[in-house]
Image (cartoon, rainbow, N blue to C red; front, top):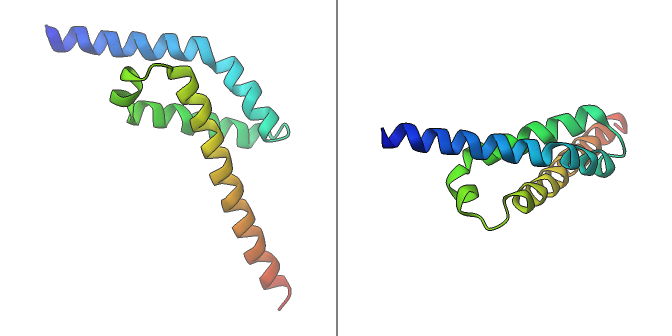
Length: 96
């Protein structure tokens, strides 16, 4: 019974968090990615995936929406680093 109540609480928490943040998060991500919808959707999906993976931390966090925005920023910079590294590698190959 208690496990069921906790599961409902967690589901409700994430449902409300998504409803309250998804539009603003997507606007922020699109701004970061200069309108690259594909990359924005990937970052959005990864953000909510990380939220679920870190649900214990997020449930205790004083500002869950802020946590999501910081996660978006970190994922964006990680993506840019990967793209930059990949681009450098491809450029090096074409110079050969």
